[in-house]
Each structure stands twice: as structure tokens, then as C-alpha cells.
Figure (cartoon, rainbow, N blue to C red):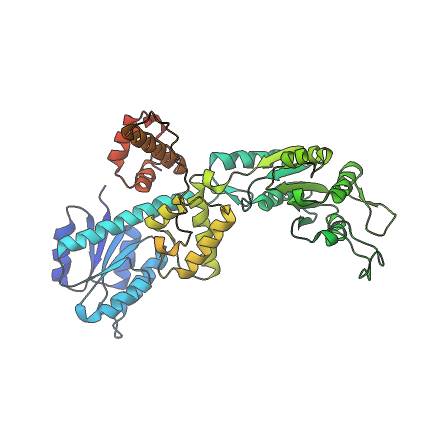
Length: 461
């Protein structure tokens, strides 16, 4: 099926010229710029591309074209509009770009040049539509967590299984992977969801204040204790306490935490009376607690008490297509918060996001997208808006080939790994994999067949 092109111009001769010039490659509809007719065609013809004369004569202020542009994009943000202008109205064209037009072309019209612009616009739209399909409502995650990768589906399954029990859960993973979000999801799906969810970062509170912060204190227990104070454990009574970076707890507080787990009571600093508790404890760490046990800095009995169920969060670099899914989610959320009309990510932005290894994981990605939304001056985030450290490629293709490998075999091994990674990152989508690798679909199919990977290529979505 041919792509659909709507041409809007108040000059009949130009309309006829462009109709015949593009009829072979596009389904073409024409309009003289009447507003009702244009929006009727948007509804019935549903064009993917629009060629718009920005200098329509329907408005006394001479801005009819700009008004049409704004209204068309508000109805269909993915619509690609190329504005056509005369030499003496370039300022209008620049204004149109700022308002969301894809590109502009200055008369007199050279059809072959305009064809190139239209082809590029259509290509960008196809990519945006593919990315848009990643974020269908109800199909981007679970319980407030975003992800479609196999690794995250396993995490979602575990959350569902553990939410309705009352046993302790240990969430592990690198910093920035979303451990607190998982803890909140467990709480919100549990029978305790009406109770409080109290989070405390054990590594962020000075050690001399940590005991009082966790267990509370009685008036006069120490200098400065001018009144009774409830600690985080007591504040979480009836709900869930989330202990982030639990590996940072000093040994003497590990003993007190063990007593809480065993006896369900606490003793505030300066008190000799026990306070009964009804709480669920979820803890998290980015450290290797089993190694800390071996080193003697973490109690073995506490480790086993906390680690009844373990949920491990994969680093972002191992989550494939989730990188772009999360990026688009943050674009939507942040552009809405800032009242910006940004609909998505360009091909160059996608390639840049995929090339980086994300040591700060999801938290770092959100910050990168925040800066991009602030810097973006159009409806599409481009590669130049993605500010990540130079030389930050993932390094996921190290070749340990040995001295017996020659240059040809090394090249083939690298090609095979790149193909496999591209398919994993795009969930087997052939079009997106080809775009990511910078080759055509035909070239990709040929390489898949060459390396016996054809069965790994999924159908386009």
C-alpha cells in the first residue's frame, strides 16, 4: 500500500504539478486550504505526510498556514508536515519548524529535491510509529514498573507471588535499578496496602543517629532528646518497612534488627519496655551480602532471615528494548509535566541510547531524558539532545578470540554478536534491528541466513 500524501496550496497549478509528480509513489489528496476540507481529509484520508504552503491567503493576518499546522499536529502528533514557502517568507518557515513542522522547502519547487525530503519524513514517521507501539496502554509494565523484557517479566511474576505473603524479601541489584519501586509494588499488592509504607536508606543516615532513627527514643535518652520520638519501625506499624542499603547497617544494629524479625518487638533508645510490632520488612542492597558475611561485616543469621525470598533486578544494559520503552515513558511523563509538545525520540537519539552502558541504570536514564526534554526545541528528541559521557559505549562485544583467530574470523564473530544483540534489544523486530545496525532489511535477512540466526528474527510489529 502506498503512503498517503496530502498537498495543501491555494495555487491550482502547483497542486496539479505536485499531484502528477508524486502519484507514482504516493496516494495523493489535494486541498486549496479550506479549513473544513483539510480537517475532513485528515479524518477520512488519514495522510502520513503533508506538503503545506505556509503562505495561504485565507487569513487577513497571513498566518493561515501556521494556524493549520498547529491544529493538524494537535490532532495527529505523528503527522509529518513539510512547509513550502517563498524566498521572502523564510521567517514564517522557521517559525513553522519551531511549531512542529518536519522541514521546509523554498520555492521554486524542484520535484526530485522535494521527493528526498518526503522520503526522509516518511522514514522518521515509520520509526516513530514503531517506537509508539512499544507503549500501548496496559502493555508497558506492571504495578507501576515499566518493562517488557524477559528479565523484567520474571521480576513481575515474583512480585505477584510474594505480595500476598508476609515473609521477608531481599531485593538485590545495582544502584538505580528501581529497588524501592519493587518494594512499593509488593506493598501495594499486599493485604497491608492500606497501612503505611515507610522507606529508610540505611547508608544515608549518620551512624550515631541511625539507632534512634530506626527504633525511636525516650525523652532524656541522650543529649538533645527533649521529647519521645517514634522510630521508623513504629511508624510502619500495620504496614511495610523498606530498609534500603541494609548492608550498611553496623553490627550492633544488625543484632537489634534480628530481634525484631524473631520476636516482632522493638525497644526504643533509653527505654526498657518492648513495643510490639505488626510489620512486614522488605530490604534491599546493591552489595554482595554473602561476601560481607564471609568478611564478617554482616551477620549470617540475619542474612538468612532477610533473604527468605530474593528478587534480583537486572541492570538496564541487560534489558534490551526496555531502554527505549523507558526513555519514551520518561519523555511522555516529563514533557507533560513541563507542558512541552514532544512526541518521541529520533533515530539518532535511539542509537545513542542503545550505545551507552548505563552505569547509573534507570535513574541515570531518567536524568538524561530530563535534560533532553529541557534542551529539545522541536517535537522530536534528537541525538544532540542526549548528553551522555563520551566513550561510553557498552563494551558488550569484547572479542576473546585467541591467537588462532585471524582478521576474517574476528570480523565474522563481531558481526554475529552485533546481530544477536540487535535482535535481543528489539525483541526480534526486523525493521528496528536493521535501523539499529544501519543496514537494510534485505541485508539483515542475508546476514541472519549467513550466520544461521534466521530463526531468531521475529516478525515486524
